[in-house]
Image (cartoon, rainbow, N blue to C red):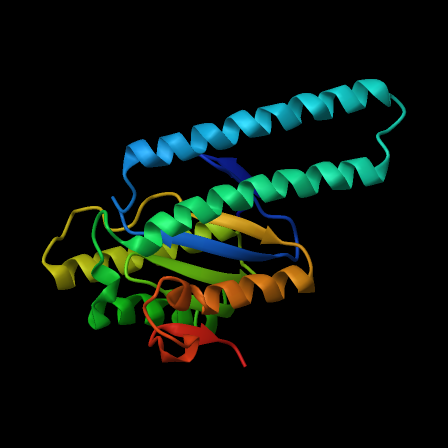
Length: 221
């Protein structure tokens, strides 16, 4: 059986430890202005650089081992920075003022929805806990991933891109942005937080009043 790497990097680092859940966000190609995206990423990286320097200082100060509470605090601070970066990207996507919104077409959204359930029920490649298909991006809470997340997502995106492009009469063009954003969910409290975020994304974007009213939101019972 082929062994797939559990870490790889494109613009963002991607890592899949054993037995974790993920919040995955993937978007249509061209849905974020490059200038805005670069500005947000550069601001995030400048802040993270300060924490990297602080982390090095701590390891120099404590050569026998940095106290666990300090490591935990650093991790928490860095996670907040990544979440702020994610929120800024998400706010741009929710406004849907740049790029295509093909997923607001029912027949296109249904291709994505059906593929997600096929991955779970037929391919047995994951367990899907929740998802929300927005006009220009998708939120997905997923676990029990086989073999690894980036392989599962690549297969899903390739299949749905082909089907959607045929439907839209644009065969051969990019449909999805190549890279997805994935966040490791480390405990049950965090899992509940992310599921609520996904379910309420259409409410946050001002598309519906109650999450149950959005036709392409799913919560596993």
